[in-house]
Image (cartoon, rainbow, N blue to C red; front, top):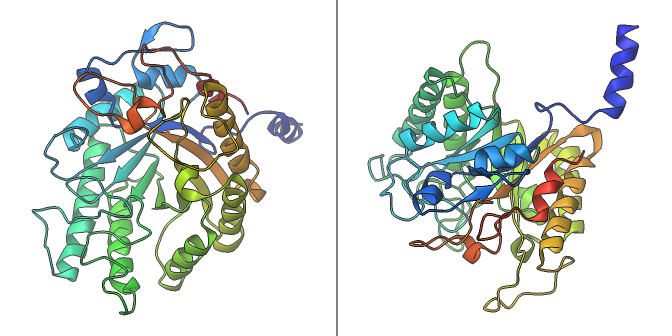
Length: 355
């Protein structure tokens, strides 16, 4: 009887938090608050963005981590700052995705600089540093009782990381160096496993900026499989002005689930709620309006939800708290935020709650 009841309930209830992650990258929250930004929750009450997103049904906060940032602009994400945000996330009953950039500053497909204090040319020494840094960082999170549920070993690493040592394509006409790059990833994975306390479970994400780009995605994960890199989730960025159409995202996510056996997650997504007159871009399936932004998020969530065999496990919005603030430039001038400049929630926030 109990088993029958469980099966009936599982058919009608949404997936448990452990199986489905929605939310956003709120790494800038501390800085936004310093700049005087304000936000309102689902009930219209003043709130910090972490608790406000939780009120809209979100259950996951992504936090980036730089090694020794200079603190300028939005590069203040050192360990103490990130631990403080992690405590706030846990207090709001949120899961945590920890995003190792393995750099003192932004890491993305065009920038992957080695931290200044780390070995700069010795691949073996650099791999040892990646492993020990990852392990000790996770031990620090465990000590503060904010151990993450998900860990990215690198950020948007489709062109490699820790350049020039871990750069895949070093010189035009030369063969790509997947072996050195894979060794660095394996070191990061060992650090995650070694820093995970007994009784805890963490899933490792490999994150590429290839949302709807199936050729690059398949080539990347094929090399990972050949070299036995340890990971659990294929993470994607998806911004339609860079990463293709919704149909291409659907094709790519389904390819990943079917051919890698990994879970799939969109760890960064974004779309504007007002058009940028300085950006000449092709027409998209969604208008740059509040309702268009909501439709975009609804469609991306649907694509990930409908990945066969339950392999799709979530969608996170990039920098949802990026409302215009005095004293600093924010992501796309605030046009991709999930709040208006006065802190009024935009309709897209309601899409997270829907099953």
